[in-house]
Image (cartoon, rainbow, N blue to C red; front, side, top):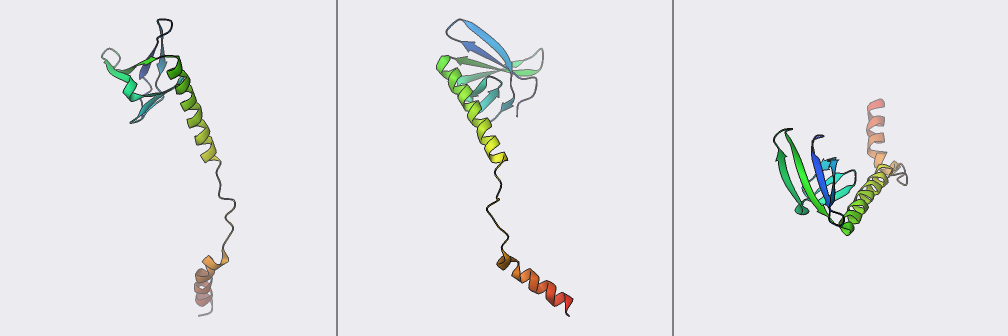
Length: 110
C-alpha cells in the first residue's frame, strides 16, 4: 500500500514533458495513480530525503499511457462487478436444515 505522500513522475516521450501525480496504491506488480496503473518493472524508485517519501519515475509513451488508463478502468469495473455480486439464485435448502430441525424437536419434546 502506498503512503499518501508518495509521488510518481510520469515522463512523456512525445513532447519532452512530465507530470507529478500522487500514488494511490502500490502492489507487488504495479503502482496505481489517478492517471492509470503502471508496472513496477518500468519504474525506478527513488527516496526523497527532504520530504521522506518515495518517488516513482515512469517513462510512458502514448501506448503505455493508454494501456495504463485501460488497466485502471478494468480494475474499477471488476471491483464494481464483485461489489454487486449477490447470491440471490441460492434459495433456502430445507434438506440442509433437517438435522437442525430434528435437534430442536428433540430438545423441545425431551
